[in-house]
Image (cartoon, rainbow, N blue to C red):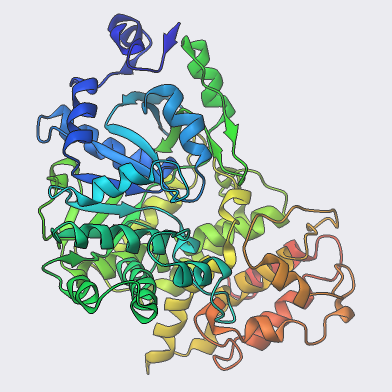
Length: 539
């Protein structure tokens, strides 16, 4: 049997016989050096980090271009550390899934330690020490869109943020407050420079991270916890930067098929866990081969040479164009459309949806609407990017991605994935935002999805979303199969610019969305029929 731990790596012949590549460096020595002089700490210890960023650092380690790894901190779901970090000596098994069904398998050992970013215990003292280290160059984040939110949809400060603002930097709970508190410790220890790098699928993600950190810091200044000098240090970009980025790699939940294949090869302990917060995690990560990372080159204390691992470095304007291209046009809006309609139509695979002519046509039309306002970043072609997504990436049968996973947190994703396109249409004198057809069809499908009833009239689970209870309460009284039960319930949702980036009624899309939604209430098969009618009318 092959054991995924440092001792198990000594059986190099066994791993190689199983076709699993091993790190070409002394993993134990890298661990020791990283703990002694940390360079990179990452918040969000889940699959995208382990399957992409940790693998990038491994590429540098394998090539002798760096000699330290990454410290992984988890501030939301600390069970991840207990389940798949500590028992495996922080190693992970990366499985890259090719469209032909073959796997590329690699043990990733670039993570030096998993840390619980919990100020009530955990590894807080060690994390503070990391931030006090002069050589720390960057702290990066993959905490999902909702990880930056300090307010709800109505603009009210979240209870956890209220607690943090009142409690000060010694007792942070929200990740934004945690980041601010650790920066305060760095300031107190001499104020060495650092880059705080959001790598989430958020529009202007560096700006969101900066705003979250400053919200906490300013609240603490007002309450007398920190000095003006801290705010001045934090505001100086020779000290602290918040680079923007664009990241792209489909990293779905761990697959039972992959687990079985690894165990058949003799790899022991490849169990899939579900944490208390619902995260599905395993000692292995399955992911597609394709990956992109574009970073604003703003690192005041230096950085790893990640360009040698395929990362694009550019100025902020180029990064923003690349991010808008991917998040607002070429991939994420299409993913959301497939998520909503895939759930309603009974699919459990994104790849299978791409074999459905109606759904494939839907995302092609959404892409065409978005391409009219996308800016070409120059380093990546929007048209080629979309073609790769639609013809290679989404249809890849080896990717065990589900519409149910993508449908999670849709209320947090819509303003990022569709709001920018709506706003750009509204600003263009040669375009009419009210002429959009397929974006409102997605919004209507999402509202229909929130009813928790599929297209056949059966009960359907709604994926976790922090706004789901509030939104579903607004839809009370609407019944699938009875269009007459829908009167004005949609108005407070569709008029909320925090959800869509604009007030859909002011944009001339509210009534369109309502009409499509009512059509989908007609009875079993009404969702499919509505979708086909919209597609055929504009064929």
